[in-house]
Amino acid sequence: MTEHTVHVEAVADRTTPDRFRAMMSGFPTGVGVVTTTGHDGAPRGMTCSSVCSVTLKPPTLLVCLRHGSPTLEAILERGTFAVNLLHEGAQGTAELFASGNPERFHLVPWEQGADSGGPHLVQDAHTVADCDVSALHRTGDHVTVFGEARLITQRHALPPLLYGLRQFRTWSRL
Image 1 (cartoon, rainbow, N blue to C red):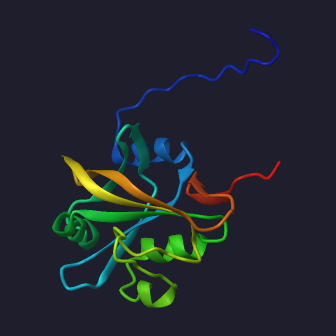
Image 2: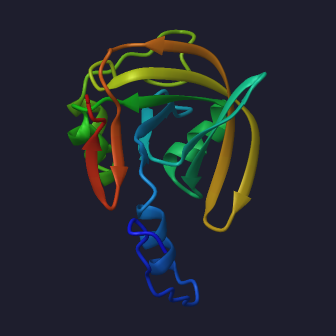
């Protein structure tokens, strides 16, 4: 061992939901709000940190949403959605859309154009990707939704909001 090596006794335990959640909280990620509209035209949305790029050709990303959520149901009905990537000043919006508050779309400014996959959070997203559903895969209590990005809108030149270790943080400006 060199002087920079730290030896830690390895402990392996059976995987439980709590241990898995604790492990994944040590993997910080960006924060997004996935939005769409229901068949009634009402906006739907939820905070999602399970966002990942899949391929450049065609430009595809994935989001993982809880099976049975109203947002997922509306995405499946419409076949489109938007991923609002939140900037450093949008922690309150991330918490609001994670809370399930039925008034959330009355509490933040948003807009939706004719070509939008879902509402754009105009003050809170640094970038929005409007997507068409290209594939689905259910695992356990979640559904992975693959979306082909057809429009990308840059809204603010601010650093992203991050989430890890059950805390929100911002990208260092160093």
